[in-house]
Length: 639
Image (cartoon, rainbow, N blue to C red; front, top):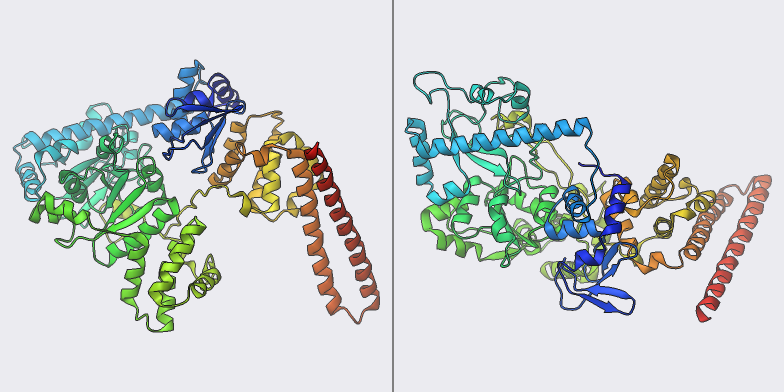
């Protein structure tokens, strides 16, 4: 990822106001000394986004999102952070840093690989359209048999990868052809096109190839369907490369963008299993279908989808594998904050078959009937259990537990638990109590960690029997809910908003005294900045130092919240006292426990009693201090 200095980011922010950027997307309103607008990130009729030109931050009280001009451009233009920086730097007239020689070389390699894939995709497409070779004629016949319309051949740039018999007068090699175009052996070996065991053998030989394109239209990989009948894998995909990550890229994304980015966007995506399913759905007028490439559906895929959609419809096969994939996908979607539902086909095993046998209208009608994700999970579990028995009711709870655990809204969670109670025929309070015991218990119920089936290298080269490697879904980014954070994180968020006070905080509070992992991480970040001797640094600089996306999001949100930007010093003082009281209370509890087991040792009892009395005195003193601070603050507020 591109790296920009804090000085450069600050120059851009100094020259462009956050209200100027927001004005591109919404009408700005003046309320006293504050600027407001209708939030363009979630759509609304009443202005709930406040714009702080003095600090360069915005915050929406409707959807909870906060950030700077960079975040706003990223969200609205659907671009990455480096792309947003480059766009705003150009607007601000700020020259970006020169790339290092290593970065220049990496960029050259990527550009060369983009060129390689684009050239090969065009070549394979022309082969499919024009060649009279017997194998190519058979490929065209196969597409026609699958009812793939000619306009879809063009839309998806479908092609055919020829083999050694393509030119009768000589042996033909894709590898030698690409070397002839000037591509190095090193680049070809990293492209994901060739076998690792036989570096000059193209894995896609004898296959219909579907180019996988990124959001800019660059071909980054291939997905190929075997027509020889000799491969152990009907479908293979390019392995990961400098330009392709199967956990993020989606077949059909680029082809869906004209509709998803248009004014009449359905804000919906259909995720399915196969290449021909994607094409069939687009052909039927459902031009927002896509599929993962060589891996199961992942959390990273949802982060791409969220740029363009609010709802994702799962359309997987109806067999056991398809049902498992649907269950995992629904949990991932819920975790990502996307609405998930399920479409079940009744006229065929997949979308391609329905299109082939019944036509486009029938396929559209099939996709018009969906079931919301939670109902699908509950119904699937109920169909496997006899819920007249208590054990079966627990089985249903276990089946839907992963979905419940990643539900971020307490209101939504409460509603889901109520629906589950009605289905099971038990009291809602019982379901809530049972959920509270089971939720987030890794030891007994590890199912909320959703494994992802990642094909091994052997599978990528055609071995469909290779064992999948388990993975874990990343945490979702939740909004900062100030009424649910503890005193330690609250304290460190205050400090983040007035970092000049960190020296005083670290003199009174050691990192070992803290329990909250997020608070400890922020303490470490400020320690690192201090050791670097960086002096006064911007909020952007701090955010880029935080590796955990959730923690960075919390800090980012705090920058735009009055709760963390007013009376900061007083709030820090109070927080430090409360943390000290809590730690002393823990020590008192520990001593009381020791007193119960040391009754026979009079000297030890006397020592413990004396220590307990001293702790009591300290706690009382600190509590009196809190009262005095509260009284002083009340007096200031009344003046």
